[in-house]
Image 1: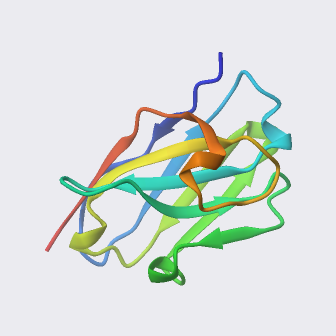
Image 2: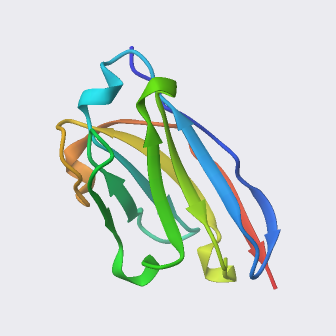
Length: 124
């Protein structure tokens, strides 16, 4: 059974930073792309960032480029999301997901295993 587990969420003042982590086991982690998504209250889940199986390629939501960075450590079977210059509109539950294939992708339907989410709240 594959179960990504997120950690690192919390309460942060606008302009601050957080680093989310996601550990995944149960599948050959290093051969699959990983992604981060978020969902704010009353809104649909949206794509944040994705990283290829090797970590050599990444893809970001246009609105988040330059502030968020995705990375992975296959030896630790963990993917990270570094979030800088946080804004109140970044407040959401952040989800980690394991892709069905090796290449980065923004499509929710390309992911088949999801974590339970971690809450990020940014206050002004």
